[in-house]
Structure formats: C-alpha cells, structure tokens
Image (tube, rainbow, N blue to C red; front, side, top):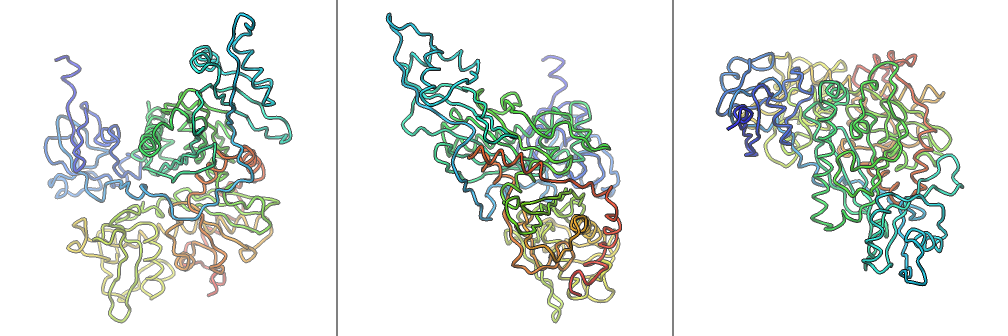
Length: 633
C-alpha cells in the first residue's frame, strides 16, 4: 500500500448508505458534497447557521460544540458537518431536518404554461441532401458537392465546422452521399430582417422519424430543471428537476460568490452544477433513449451569478461596487467545454442578464409571460432569496432585485425547512377551542416550517390577535405562547408529535426575519411604481413566478404585507417562467431575438442607491405596514 493510500479512508453516510473516500482534514460537508449527498447549509459552510447538524454514529472526527450545539448534544454525537473534520473511518447519520430533500423536484410545476410560438423555426434546422456519388466523370470535391446540395435549399455562404468537415468523407460514403445536414443560424439582434449567420454543424444518417432535439435548462440557485424538446415537431416533454449540487456551499448567490473566490471553489461550483445537469440527462436517457446523439441546441436561463458559475467565470465583481458582471450578453458556448455530456456539435445559448442581480432567468420569465407586448401595467414577481421585480408593459419596463433573505425558503427560521414531506405549509387556529390545525406536506408528522407555511402561520396568528403589528406575541392570548431559549415562541407541535423528536416552534425572531423579507419585496414594488409616477392601485396585473409562488396563499400574503392589496382576480401564477422562456427560445429563433430586445427594454434600479427606498423599507417593517391605508385598514 502506497503512502497516498495510507492517508485515505472511508466516511459512510446514513441513511443513504453511501461510503466516500476521504483524507484527514477534510470537513464532513466537503466529503458529502463530493459524493453528491446534500446537507442543508444556509451559510455556505461558514459555521454561522447551525443547519448542517449530523450525528456521529461510529469512528472519530475533530470537532468542538461551538455556538449551535450544547454540551449534551455534542456528547450525544451531534456535529456540524461544516466544522467537523475527518480524522479516520467514521459513520454519520444525516437527520431529516438537515437533509436536503429532493422529492419536491421529481415532478414539474403544476402551473399552466403557454408553449405556443407563431412559427416553429429553431436556431438549428436540418436539411436532406441527396447527392450523386463521385465517379471518373465527376470528381467534384466532397465539400463542393455538399455546398451545391445546400444551394438547392437556398443556403449559401455557410461556415463549416471543422469537426463536420473532418467526419464528412466517411459519413458521405457510408450513406452513399444521402445524408442529413444540420445547420445552426445565429439570429441577428439589431437587424431582424437581415439574413442570419449560418454554420454547418454536422452530418448524420437519414432516419425514419427525422427527430432532433433541443434542451431547455433553468439553472436556479436551489434547483435545476431541464426539458427536452423535439425541434422537428415542437413537442415539449415534461420537465424534470433536481437540487442544484452547489447548495452545500450556501443557499444564496452571495455565499456561492464568496466560496468561488476561495482556492478551487469556482472549479468545484462549476463541476457541481454541470454534474447536476448531466444527472438529469441520464434520467432523460431512460425516457428518450438515443436522444443525446441528436441533441443540437441548449438554451440556459439563470440568474447572473448562476450563469457565470455554469460557464466557470469568476463572479466576484457581481457583489462588489459598482456591481459589474463580467458578461451580460453571452456569445455562443460549446457546452462540452463546460463538462456537459453532450455531442461536440451542440451549441449552448445563455440568456442575457440586465444587471448583477436581475439575470437571464428574469429576461426569460418576461419572454414567457408576454408583458413586453401587452398594454396592461403589470407587476412581475419572482419571490425567493433574491427576489426580482419587473414593472411595465409593451412600452417600457423597470426592474430591480431585493435581498429578501432565505426566509421564503425556510432559511433563517429556527424550525425552517424547504417545501418537502413533513413541512408545515398551512395553519388554522380555532379560537373557541384554542387548538392548532396544521397542514403538513405528505400528511405525516410535522418536521418543520416551509416558506409558505411561515406566511400562513403568521397571517393567521395576526388575524386572530395572537401576533401584533410589531410581530410580537400578545401576552396571554394563547396557551401555546412560552419562553424558549431564543425568547418568546409559539408551540406548533410538541416533540412527541413531531417527526424530528423536537418541538416545532415559531419564534419572534422567525417573525422578524419574515417581516424583513416581505418588507424588502413590498418596498421594492413601491419604489419602482413611484419612480415612474404611478401608484400601486394603478397595477392591472400581478404575475407570480417560481416554485415558491405556486404555494402562496394570496389572501395571507396580502395580510402580512408581502403582496399589494389588489383584487385577487388580478393575480396569476405561471410556474417556472425561466424554463418556459428557455423552451420558447428553443422553438423559435425569433423568440431568442425577442429575449435580447427585452433586455434592452428594461431599466434597472439599484434599490440600495435609489432615493426613498430605505424609508419605504423601514415603513414596511410592520404587519402589514405602517400605512394601513395601503391595505384597506
């Protein structure tokens, strides 16, 4: 056994029963991440959130209790995965509350999508070429023969991929000079009537179904979704998704940017997101065998940071004043060079960004919701850790990003978790019997509180007078109010009735974090509306996007001051608009051109530097607001 081998040992994770080779000094979080085992870590492994608790079942690890573990918990085997370092073989159990549950990504969003384009004309088209083989009377070179055949389709002056030219002699003769040519067209951006630039990508045998494919990708901070599209028919297959493999290094973009700047952090993050996409490609292999050889085009929409991490480009200047991203409008990218397991001829088109914090996912979302071509004054919201807002219509659009924090996704909440089995997502308080009624995802025992559950609980407690306008519990208003280790708290479920053998509680600190988050969003709407001389009552439509948006109770969101007080019929939910827009761009080069146009229509506001924003933010730090008239009170 070599010296190198002497230094390695296995760390086993339960209940996955996965063993991973490790070296002394690596953190348990790093080891788990390398083995694609997800452990919650809101802070990106900085040791300041306490959410990555694991239980040491056997072996040893270098660790100390720290701020988030008591001496008793430490003696019982609990460790923070981001701080415990491997010293030898060991087995760790990942409890439910620390596990990043991916079950919610196994199904596509429920919202209705409009995947209709005026004309199916993707950026890649295929042409049948039937040529006469060379003989003694006709010794025209192969490429000239191909050029002449393409001219019959009114195609001329095409560039030719070297890889296509290299493979050309073999495939032409193998197929007796009867092949299919795939041609990529770069849509002109400034001059839509100009003939698009074309490039011969590859040759392939003619097939009976003539199917060829594109892949739409939504690279989200939390999850990654993909959808396969048959470019010959326009048929879009159901979307599939999974957790973004980067989540072990933080649940928000700032944590990712910080991690990218440490050592080989950028390389790790880039390989983790491409590994997530490759895993989804393998799942597509099961439902659409053989599609990969006929995959020609990929479109990717993500926020500005996620697009840079996918491309492996250092994102540090995104978070540093004056907040300049390295790239806003992306050239075509060879996805194979990024580590994606796709053919060499494939082309990746990344959606353009507007600013450091309003990215291609929002441009794609606007393309999907159509507000850029409608007269109604529309508010478009993507609620999340980095909440994005767009206000406008066919004539103009303004946009901004709000640093809402992780509360909407269960972060920064004592018993917070994502929307997964065991999460409390609904709540009703019986004032006569003084009894809690919990709505739980999966209908099992409660484990924690997800973002929509947090909104619903606080709204109900405010409505019945248990929580006041300041977000404080009203003394003696309910038998469930008590003093906990973090101050006043409300008992939702005792340990004996929970799935995690701990009390599930809502603390005043949790409510405070929610108020900050909803305040950031609402003051953002106000700032953009007033910047163009309008008021909230002028809004004619409100469109909500994103996975979190699907579970928002509109009345409760208005009650706490997250959404404007408008008639419910003005609200609509469009699901994963980022993926929808990416799908439309696959089907139509005109839609891709419109995405570039949308970017130029949008005027970005840096809220922190916009006069009046902070005053509006402070005024929103109440339930629902200091100005009760905004909510009809």
